[in-house]
Image (cartoon, rainbow, N blue to C red; front, side, top):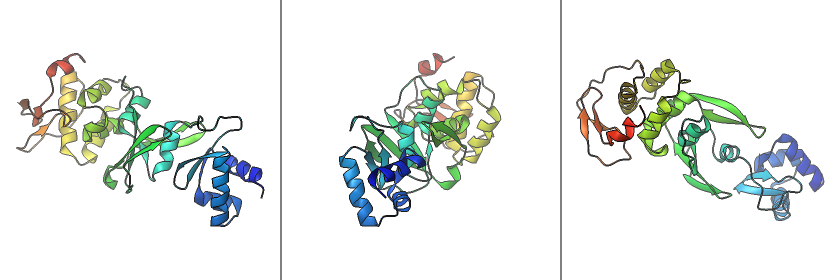
Length: 253
């Protein structure tokens, strides 16, 4: 099979491919394929995303200037995966902030948690299998990608506020009228972190958004926002230390 035929065969399968897929498509041996991919990369036909993962460069595109949507590239970095946290908030229009990092959630181990590809930083966040749910698919640049749904995005951000810019960003998102409150309640209890229930309960009370949540039966207090200094008044109902300037939330009402 000639080089151009191999490239066309790759392209028919999509915009990206792995080394293992290349073996099947080309019918070449490992060394022959490795040598061919090296030449194809040098000639600008493909770009290497990371070891064993490649992107096809369209004809006429300038070498080193072409790239794919960051979610498409993110979908290749680890399996299973879901675009999540701040990246999902922005995708749904639930934050005005534009994150400079693409957040990817997975249950798998990844040697590098932070990866830079074509100038974009990707943060891979490993979670327990019991927390990996609430995922849907979207088509981006002819590629189907996995992303947490609106409600799971909110819950994930309450679980790990450091990956969404803090609790204020979650509070802004909670005002969205398209959120399914029953699903928020179910997800909050399913994720297995009482801090999520407490933060969701406090914010929903503050914003006047009714979400059915269980009472908190514990004596310990958690921080409302783990990204902020550990000082603040205590909220007895939700057992939270309100370590956030209330004026920041007042602006949201």
